[in-house]
Length: 164
Image (cartoon, rainbow, N blue to C red):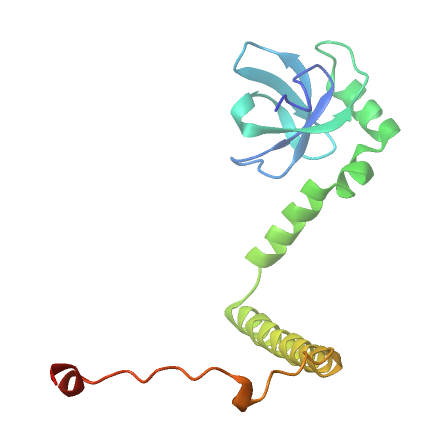
């Protein structure tokens, strides 16, 4: 599957790991085939070289020139309202949910565990009621022939009878 987003000047990315993990930044310059100069003045990312392996590219792109200043990046960022647009993406929502899960205490996890049990029990009971209702409303199968009409199966002989 071909990549959806390419490394280019102005591409907005999310830093995947390290001290700035989870923060958004913009690619300002490509240093070589492994690193880019990034800047995120509004998200708290200082101007620094970062490996492409640490970046997660997004669909957003700023219209900035090659090697531009932090001030220009900041203006373009505000003009395009990148923070609000990024907050609506699935990636941002997934990151927020992961952070929320990370902040849970042991008691919070226990409460979630019990709620899931209760929810699954309600679902199971509803499903059983629906199954019983469907079974009772199902058409009855055709009547089977009476016992007299059935052919009699021969009895199986025991080992003693076989010897005689």
